[in-house]
Image (cartoon, rainbow, N blue to C red):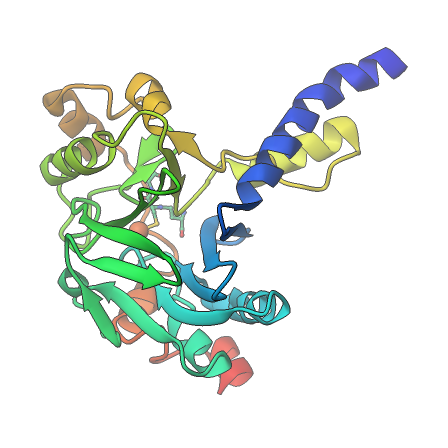
Length: 287
Ligand SMILES: N[C@@H](CCC(=O)N[C@@H](CSS)C(=O)NCC(=O)O)C(=O)O
Ligand SMILES: [Fe+2]
């Protein structure tokens, strides 16, 4: 029985270790946390300079803005920017609420997104925090205003919905285009050195794996979804982007996905940093 327990626990242990290193790495003066929203399956990323304490948050979710603000406070960070990879359709951004919870921080999004923000960025811009910076790369195709943030010093990139682990963002709304996405991902993301680690905005496999792991082992309480990938892995294993452009087009036009449940409230709210016509439950909580 003990052997059986070990047999099922070992992969979970490996997942746990790799998840912990992805979630909370602290090296070369960079603090890095990967946070998850189980409802929308969204990853939020906190990056900070460990000396100056200047920090940025990428893709916060409104329901978890208080969690993010608390972490920023606990780590003694000075939140400089709350930024989005694009105007999300599936959840309301935490940007506007974080500006209230953490006075002084500024919202940031691509000019092409059409959303309001304190700072609009374009391809080639640099977002600086402490001694670190993220290069902005335009990666349209899922939406026309999608951007990827690249840290060359730490060999990591935050791809939003342009590239998901073994997948990619859909292209059937918000000016989506399979041709454009294919070009963006190949020219701006998969052209990075093979060892670069790619962090997506969503992991739709996490919650299911979480339940299965719990049932099998009764040990870990962490979800064991796919938290990150590399350029090399996606070039070899991505079931959509390893195809030629015609096959990719065919896959993307036949995904048959239902529209995101919250698209009608998310898009108008995200045009104004998430603080417009909030659903009643959120308005009551945060106003
Ligand atoms: N079921 C979810 C929405 C799922 C979805 O459409 N996700 C988007 C990213 S959020 S705009 C997507 O591009 N998915 C690609 C895929 O292959 O799944 C909901 O109702 O919110
Ligand atoms: Fe999206």
